[in-house]
Image 1: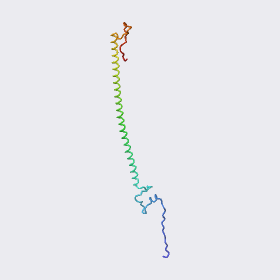
Image 2 (image 1 turned 120 degrees about the vertical axis):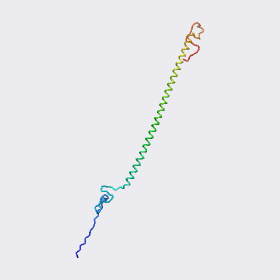
Image 3 (image 1 turned 30 degrees about the vertical axis):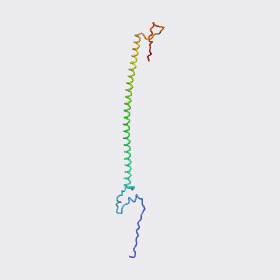
Image 4 (image 1 turned 60 degrees about the horizontal axis):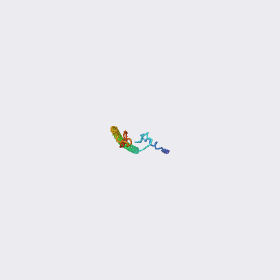
Length: 150
């Protein structure tokens, strides 16, 4: 027993990257719990959830703004259609008024012409009312004692 040999064991540790250390097996051959072999990066799930929540909130706000704008445009279109209907009705009433006034004017003009013809026929039958002092025996037609506004 005099020749006892002493043996010294040393363990060699090699520095590995983070992805390789996650893939490392336990001494019993099992993988670390909660870590998958295909996972390349380790991002906490709550960061992803917060990011998706913020994106969802922004999307919801955008949808609300678009719906509000569409509703306002529909209201403006309805108001413009009402104004257009009122204007077209007003235009129709103006045309009717103009047509009525034109008819009244034509009736008055015809009535005036009729009265002028009656006066002319009355004076032509009577033989005239004005004579020249030097021409006592001559009748002058169309010479009247008063002026007509023709």
